Amino acid sequence: MSVSDATSETIAPTAGLDAGGDVADFWALLKPRVMSLVVFTGFVGYALAPGHLHPVLAAVAILCIAVGAGASGAINMWYDRDIDAVMARTKNRPVAAGRVAPEEALTFGVVLGIGSVLVMGLALNLVAAALLALTIAFYVFVYTAWLKRLTPQNIVIGGAAGAFPPMIGWAAVTGDVGLPSILMFGLIFFWTPPHFWALALFRSGDYAKAGVPMLPVVSGARETRKQMLIYTLLLWPFALGPYFIHLSGPLYLAVAFVLSALFTYYAVKVCREQTDKAAKQMFGFSLVYLFALFSALLVDHALSPWWA
Amino acid sequence: MLSKAASQALNRRRRTRNLALGGVLLALVVMFYLITIVRIGLTS
Image 1 (cartoon, each protein chain N blue to C red):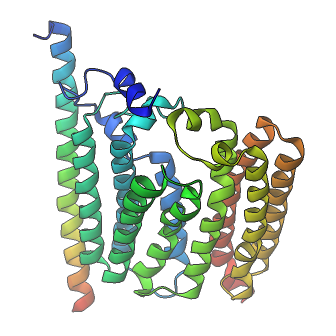
Image 2 (image 1 turned 90 degrees about the vertical axis):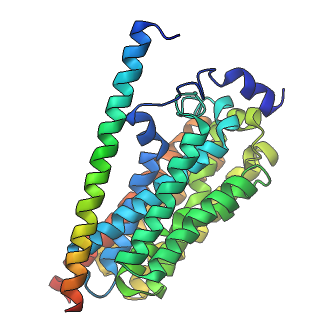
């Protein structure tokens, strides 16, 4: 059964009649859990940037990053409604479940996306606005519309979209893209493959059913586990890098070392045990890893006057 | 033709959405006001 066949049976017939979902559905279109990670990393990028930004403008910058990320999510749900309806993890999303009409989701996403870029440009600077526009465009056109259904490298290249927020936060303050923000970009970029492939390992049946060529579906679980370990090792220089370019101090270095060692341990465990349980542990820890690493950057930065 | 219960549910959803939209518009007005004040302060 093709994806479109499956979709025609699964999408609720109410879509389009009065699909007007409630406020919670529109909130869900913004992918709030993804948004929280984006907002947090964007905030760290802003906080670590040299210079001063008025608190109101800082709040506007973070809001624009959040809304831009949400807009990408809404457009993604509009475009992927056919495969979302097939997969157990996504079948209850507002568009796939028929609670919000596709055209409403698209309009919602486009208006928010354009609005967030315009406000970023007007209130902050053009570099931050251009980066935000690039992030949205990259997620929508490069990842969602092009790579996701085409290649198992979809989340490797598409992962760049999720890596831009700290760079946008940094650019909102400085008006440019410095080496530290590129390092933070690299950190998220190389973290994304092991994070997503851990999920794909224990959801591979779902992806196969929807016809999404995730790495475990195309190349098998063994190759995926190997690639996860490789990317986890590639992550080390980006995790420890902030200390060596004097963006952070010894506290961050210690935390980054321990977290990276644990992340590598989980990647090795996935390779050795070859179970869904190990993949789930790796996925869960990957979220802790990124939040903890960026938290460490923030705390270390806040404490830096004490050991300067 | 919608049943009475369905019609009430529809109206409730619309009312909630309209209130949320009103809140967002109000927040936008306040945000643009604050941005203007801050930017005027920065340039002067």
